[in-house]
Amino acid sequence: MRLLLDGDDDHAVHRAAYQWADPAQGRITVDPTPHTTSPAYLALDVLRAMGRDGFSRPEAERMSTDPAWRAVTCWTLACGGLDEVIVLRAHRLTTERLRRLAAWRADTGIRLTLLAHTPEQTDLQRLLERLTAAELVDVATVRGTAAVLEAIGPAATRRRTGPPPHDHAHQLPTLPRSGVAAFRADCWRRQNATDFAHSDGQYRAGYAAAHTWLTRTLPLQPTPPEVTDDADHPAEPTPFTLQETEAVRLFLARLTVSSPSAQHTVARVRGAQAAFLSRSLLLNVPDDLASRAGPGITTVPLTPRTVHTITVRLPNPLRAAAIAALLFTGTDTSLLSMTQIASVDKDHATVAIDRDSRINIGEEPGPRHLYAVPP
Image 1 (cartoon, rainbow, N blue to C red):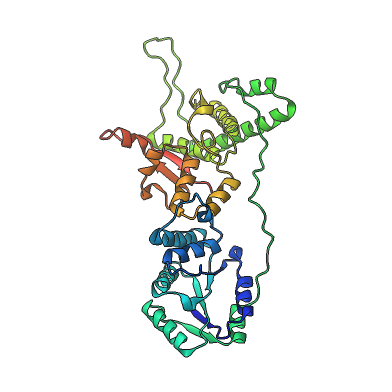
Image 2: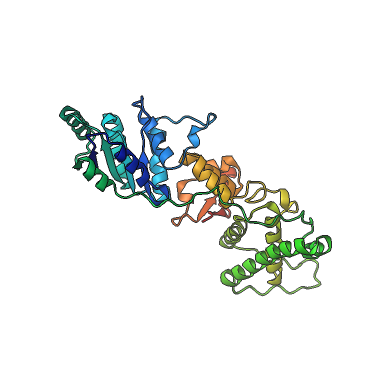
């Protein structure tokens, strides 16, 4: 940890610290709110410097000390881009605030720099005592305006920042409620050339994705039973195993999780059904597909713009994760709230929700509902 001592309280030092900061490059400068010694306020100052200032809205919830610092630590680890931090007016930090900074540094591995203004020796001695009480003992001290400016380093190369990313997706018209057998033909009859090209593009994307998935996952299909005239022994479809059912659910989740609208989702699913039929497999979906639960259907589509809003406007990481999970699963909040940490795979790519065992306690476990976590 570095301790920069600006005994002259030079305005150039403050300006250099602000110009050095660049959150996009993992460098922030924290300016503690004056006239308060609350550790929670310092955490909110850190979140503000990180660009997560959703708490500043009048209707936003107020976070107490522990949740606020958990938010700081979680965002630092989750985003993985924050490396260096300068905290201004460090000579005014209380021991408790310094302890919180020390814990943040220990949990995340950031490089912490404290910028203090201590013109008198007694001021420096008091600051050193607080640092010792906060167990910040590995301190490299830099004195003098010139040396402090050199230690801060050059100003960041500013990059132009604009509004949240736009969602580039052609809006599809209302699609026919036809089943898979007549869906594409009905689209062709009812839509103009431009709309049909976009609808058919989503349909073909679903077909290609399902065809590729079937080729990789189910390369060898059992020979379908012979059709006989024996009414007592009609031909029946070959059921999927539990693992195959889970795999199908995960495939559908991956197919629809990035869908920008319910219409896109319907077109993709119909295309996937057609690919299954080409392999003599019937993929059943609800008749009222457009109004059923699921990502991109009954939830706000998890587009880049939506992700930007969640990560920037929500300082509480638990709430941000919960909202994101609701959007990319489309499941019920009660089921999602019972999901365990172990339900997230080690690569953080899937979430398993075992709704059947939650509802039918004591019965044999059925196939889980697997959802894909968007990249």
